[in-house]
Length: 73
Image 1 (cartoon, rainbow, N blue to C red):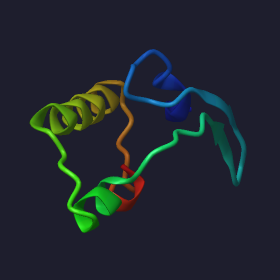
Image 2 (cartoon, helix red, strand yellow):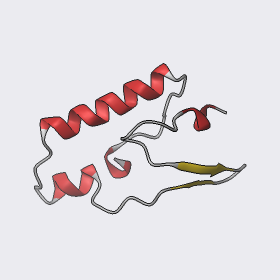
Image 3 (cartoon, rainbow, N blue to C red):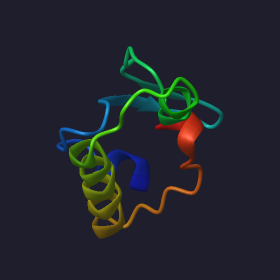
Image 4 (cartoon, one colour):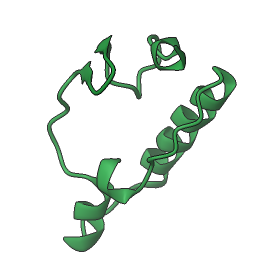
């Protein structure tokens, strides 16, 4: 599965298990990009670059995330 290819990148949560209708991964405490924008919390260029780097890494591993939006970043 492509889901299991991203196991060694610092911007990805650890993925422990993938089932037919579920995935198990690390819980990451914090605010989403949407919440930050809504609450006028600064998002630095470095943070944006980290997201870009992580998505580029996923593409190179053959994984094309289709559910990426401000509510889950």
